[in-house]
Length: 201
Image 1 (cartoon, helix red, strand yellow):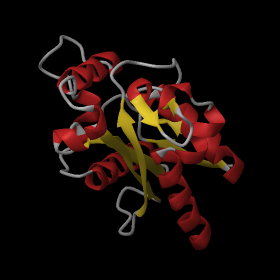
Image 2 (cartoon, rainbow, N blue to C red):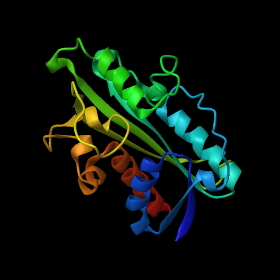
Image 3 (cartoon, one colour):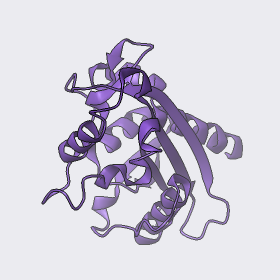
C-alpha cells in the first residue's frame, strides 16, 4: 500500500475517498496525523485551491498528497457558493457548520421558482508526488442536480440533504454509499485522477 496524505480534516471526505482508493493500493492518512494548521486557500478557482492544499500537505508530511477543493454552484445565484461552499454562512453565524451553510442556501433560494433551481457539485482533485512537484495530476468532476426546498435523508454531508439527483429520484443524502461513490463529483474526479496515476505508474 502506498501511503498518501489527504489534505483535509473532513471525516466524511476521508471515509468516502479511502473507500474508493483502497482497492487501488492507496493507504489514505489524514493530515491531522502530521499537522493541525491549514493551507491558505487564496486561489480564485477550485483547481488553484486544491493545488495549494496538496503542496502544503506534502511539505508538512513529507509524503505524496491528495487534495480536493469542491463545492456547490447554483445557477440562480450566479455560481455561488462556489469556492466558498464550506464557509458560505461566515459572518452570519458564530460558528460555521454544514447546517448553517445549508440553511443559508435554503434562505437565499426561497424565492427561486421550481424550474430555476439547477445546481452542480464540482470537484478538483490534485495529486502531488512532493511539495514542489512541477506537474500536479488533476482530475475534475461535475455532478448535476437541483436544490430542494427542504432537507431529505440523513446520509452524506455538506449540502447533500438538499441536492436532488434526478437519475435516482432521491436527494444525495438518501443515496447508499455505493450509489454515491459511482456518480458523485468526487468519485468522477478521483477516477480521472486514478486513470492518470495508473498511466504514469
